[in-house]
Image (cartoon, rainbow, N blue to C red):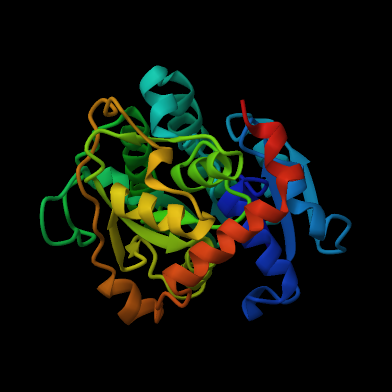
Amino acid sequence: MRVLVTGGAGFIGSNYVRKALSGAYPGLADAEIVVLDALTYAGNEQNLAMVNGHSRLRFVKGDIRDRAAVLESMRGADLVVHFAAESHVDRSIAGSAEFVLTNVAGTQTLLQAALETGVRRFVHVSTDEVYGSIDEGAWTEDFPLAPNSPYAASKAASDLLVRAFHRTHGLPVVITRCSNNYGHFQYPEKVIPLFVTNLLDGRPVPLYGDGLNVREWLHVDDHCRAVQLAAERGRPGEVYNIGGGVELTNLELTRRLLDVVGAGPEMVRQVDDRKGHDRRYALDFTKAREELEFRPEVDFDEGLAQTVKWYAENRAWWEPLKP
């Protein structure tokens, strides 16, 4: 079996690759893993250092918008797991062109190649942000898409392209939409690694607005396990929400990080709120529980403590990435 993993040197993709090669996913025990990654600012070969040289790993430096590179990498693949994306909301607000080119045009290039090469399963990894914002309750998979940031809009567009290739061409696709991920090897522009690394350096942390925006948190190990379950058990053409079940305001998250690092409230700086900042995300992942038998396994407090410990012990990885 051959698996193509796009964005396999990024935060979530590299975790999936490391787990696959470590034997964590029995269905991939003998699979050849081909990583296609453009190694943009968030893609880092160091994320794969512990599996570098593995007999079942092949790395291809290439862009998912490059049809030739995509076809070369996908040839012979049975499964495509598509993580590659521009994903930082703030960057999409500053300039959205790369988000459209990578997340929409890049996904179209992959879908067309998958159709031409006869891929047997295509898993498209998306985000809860495509739903917009919800004041109460939780989104099920049939909620209408109402993205509010250019990033979320580009992901929603890619979701619809994936659906269209299934409906039009019969491509066997599965879409997953996850809540906020955390864990080690996450690029330090996202809130948890940004705050942790700032605090480890004795620098204040920037808290948007009143800090009461709510996010649902999911450990990257749980997310990647859910993606593999979707690859193995998901019904073609279906969407699966992958939630962590832990809802926190940004202020609550900040206080927990201060406690773990051993810093005081004087390290928090209130900053102007982000444009179009979604107030609350929440996923109903009953479908994933029932059809994929997915349950989050990593306790949030334990996972957060392990994440802080990893950043404290791996300065050589993140210090060159900080401004």
